[in-house]
Image (cartoon, rainbow, N blue to C red):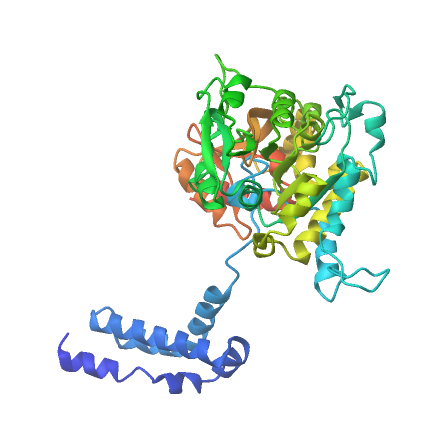
Length: 503
């Protein structure tokens, strides 16, 4: 195409002002705003000029594109201004899926968030006195009841049992008691990494923190315990070996610079075989003997007794406090089943010290997180575990999931030659760095095709109106029903039907 011919085609394109004056465009401006509409119109015209310059457009195509300009501008604006953060259906079988937002919130938690966020709230006001209060009280009182304190001891302690964990009474010692509830206080920051950073900065800055080499973990995003410690101003002192650390290793490492003994839960891996690790009771006795603080980073934050769903070996917050740990840090959006948060709980005097640290204000959370956390904790106190979505998914039996999968299969059309769908046994995992190695028996819809790769089927499911996130195993796409909410079944059915009937 000659230069003069292209020039003639360029002249067919309207100016941005001409586009804005076209019928229908004013409604777009009113909805999306003038500047955004101008930007979209300019981008469209630039694209058309580029295509003309490349010889891709003829007269008829240009005329059609100009006529359709308002509709194309509206489509582009809707795409660019749509929410990027979207709900998805988790069919991976990973209950606390980090990439999918970890623990889903309960209906009660969501309602309470809306209730206290759409207007004003008593976040930091004592309604009885009318004076300024502290935001911590909204959840501190609930943790005190659940974990035991002088202000409200859970009756389970009096019988020597807490959520299924037997205890033996011991004689109280200097810094709290082993086997009995202590005066527990709790404060909240924005995640567990922040909780660990804050604790180390307040309690060990300028001193040494003793940690077993087998506990120098790295969590997602290359986030490492030694790096957190370096930022806190505390010095790391490693003891023991990767697989074996004895209480004598800690005792020999304690010196005049030692401020803290730190136990870190290996949240996302296991060490098995020729291993050794001192008990928390041994560490607690050593800490009291040598006058240092014992802190535990539990990470996942287990309050519910996972043994009831067949998962063993996951430490609980209550057990750590009973064993004599002074301070425990853990997450709100893992096994607790609440919003993202970092919880610091333990000895009331130590927690009060941490609360005065300037970093606390920088790391604290707002009313929405407190509302969601408060509602979640109230469900625990009512023992209404099925109200917490993550716990409900863990508690589903293999038989319940099997019956549900059979119902879904009966609703599916006959399997086509292009796609095969069948029910298979599978294993769900808790995820989120919790209970590494533990699995829960489940059922999944397995989709395979001679014409479509498993990756292509998974891509099509992710492109659904509500994206469906599955996992690929052995050339098949698995939709694990443990993590799919029952009200999402119809959406999954429609998506599978579409995949099965399309080429």
